[in-house]
Structures are given as C-alpha cells and as structure tokens.
Length: 369
Ligand code: ZN
Image (cartoon, rainbow, N blue to C red; front, side, top):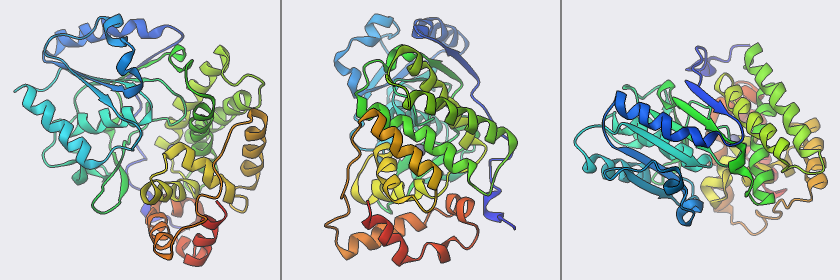
C-alpha cells in the first residue's frame, strides 16, 4: 500500500542536542546558562509554569539577570497562535539583539510555548504561518527544556502544539528547529504533581507508543523507543506506588522515549479524537486522551483493557458523560475537528480512513465518551 501523505519530514530524524538526567540535576542549570551567555551575549527569556509563580524557584537557582524576561504561563488553556505572537512581540521590543537563550520550566504547554516562541523570534510572520511540516526556515533561539511533569514527550519531539483560534486548527510547528538544544531531566521536579494529573499526563506517553506501534508507518528505531516506553509505563502504573522516586524516574524516561518514538512515526486514532475534544470543548490534551480511551475498544483492544486495568489499579478519575448534552452543531464540529487529521488517521487506518470513520460512526464514538 502507498501511504504517500506520510512521507514528509520524519525520515531523517533529529534528536535533542544534549540532556542531563537524574535527581537533583536541576542544579546544573546555572552553569549551562552561564556558558551559553558567553558564547552568545543577549538576555535570557524564562518561561515557567504558573505553578511556580509563588515558589521562588528562579531566585533559589540564582540565574536571572536584570535585562532578562520571566514569563509565567497560564496552563489552564492550551497555547494559541495569538498568545505566541504576543509574547514574541514583547520579547522583540525588549532588546534589539536576539536573546542569548530561552529556558522553559514546566509541563507540555510551557515547553511548547518556548519552542514556538524560539522559532518565531528568528522567522518572519506569525505563528499560524508555521503550523504544519517543515515550514520554519531559520534556526531558532537556543533553548533549554526542563519538564516538571512526565508524559507528553514535548521535551523530545520536533513539534509544539498550538491552537489557531480563527480556524480552530490544532497543529504544531513540526520542524528540526523546534527540537530542544539541551534538556535537564530531574525527576525531583515531579514529586508534587497531583495523582490524577500525574496519571493522565503519564498515559500520554503510553498512548503515543500504542498508536505508533499499531500504525502503518513504522521503523525499527521508532518501535524500539515505543516498546521500551510502554514497558516502563506498565511498571509504573501497575505498581502499588506510581509516584515513588524510582517510578518518577521511570516515567520521565518513558516520556522522553515516547517523544522520540513519535518523532520517527505518527500517532493514530486516539489523538485526532482527543484534539477535537480540546478544540471544540476546551478539554486539556492528556485528560482528553484518557476520555477518548472510553471508546477505543474496537481500535486498540489490548491497550483498551490494559489502560482500564491501570485506571482501576491506581483508583484515578477519568471524566465520563462529557458528550451527553451536546448539540448537533457541536457534534458536527467534533467530527470536522477529528477527520482533519489526515496523517495520523492514514497511519492508523490507511488512505481510505474517511470511509472507515464515517460521520455517523465518529459521532457514535463521541457519544460513548
Ligand atoms: Zn499526546
């Protein structure tokens, strides 16, 4: 079979430049920043998850200088193109030279905002011009990613997901320039994540890999990343204490490997449905994935059973009945926002995916959530 629309941008794989892994590795940040400032003078832009706004983290690390910009990211809503454009304007007004570097400390949203802004500073136009595959022309600002929750794999992927509020398109800037130059992977940072959030986000790694392994577009390296990531997720979520020190190390590793896996493959049926829940109903990516798992028995029967046994083992909550009182117009929107994702759907179901996912069937799938 010929899957021609899958052949863009994933064949020659770019990985993260450097990474440091381990409990307490955040203490290396200051030295890395100082080295970079010598190589490339300019200010430093810090993006931090709102969670840290009252935590004094940056002053403890002693890394902020007077001309630097510290921007807290409200992660209640997923980042939009307008938001990215506004931050780019603010940074460009602050100095007439490019920043020395960008540092992101937070979850998937914060890591994605930093990636998008780093691309946009060195490229003309607006964020919406770069949603797609390999549209970014100039190398981005040097950037350091420091995840504080595990699962999305944003730290290791070549994309940064943003929503265009004008046309409803939820799509990343898929580019080699989007990949982080440096990561600090410190599992100490994930010790305060609430249980449900820890589970929902961790399952994003599991789901990425399940979708990759069951797709049409496969390669041995991507499969190896996926298999190892799934193995680690099982160890974490089928254990009695999913948030132990060892399990937080394992989940941070699974997240990184899961990101590498989709860097050389594609997701499948779950992510398009999940994206529709985010775009139409404003539900966050990771919990949306878990909600979609309510209706995935026919597409991913083994993962479906395993997923629900993990939910039961960890006694976490997965919202139910979210499509109960929707209007016909909302179901139309959900259908359109799902079927638009041709690459993952082709990967999962082949070129004729739209014949398999008829409108009636898609609506029925949503109704079961
Ligand atoms: Zn995901």
